[in-house]
Figure 1 (cartoon, rainbow, N blue to C red):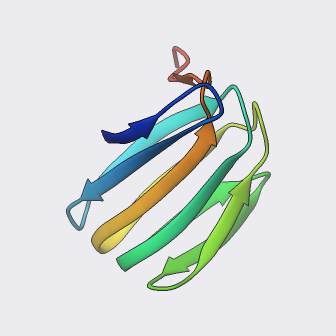
Figure 2: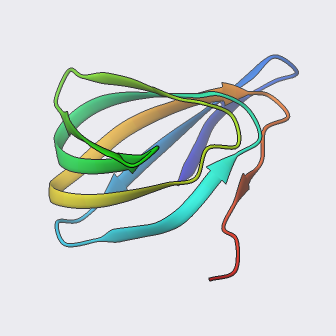
Length: 91
């Protein structure tokens, strides 16, 4: 993940992951908004699987553990609170 912008109110991260990547279970300390630029991935959150495709958006609640499985090379923007932290808990 690459930080594109950050201030006291929000931060914008760019995610670029190749097909076959599995992002391990993690959560953010604030609500996170995903805006998909290209590719295809499966987001597993709250026991449900959602397909993320170009042009789609998804809101992930604060402190909600989730997993991302990249099906096709994936690019997205993530917008969160400026002080938000992403945590990867021990398995």
